[in-house]
Image (cartoon, rainbow, N blue to C red):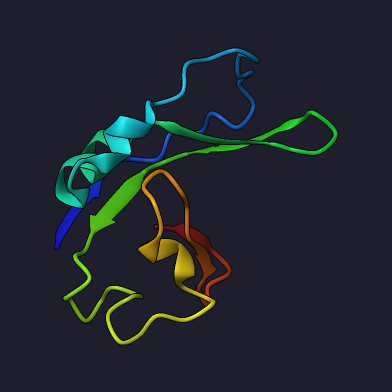
Length: 104
């Protein structure tokens, strides 16, 4: 596992452009160990049904292969982790007890 940590930047009050380039889908076809570090500092953006943008800055990444016990797909495939077995460029979002939302 490779873990990359960057200091969090308080930018929640900054405006985000409505039109900004997305990473190409081919980028996510690379091995997780290459993709993870490149995502630090990127914005993860979701357009809400009402058109507003919900976004945050990626401040840390972890990269696991499916044969590592820390991977949520290690033990078995289930409806909860199905996204991990799909095509690249999809996000698997889960919550942990400290009330954070994490994505793989």
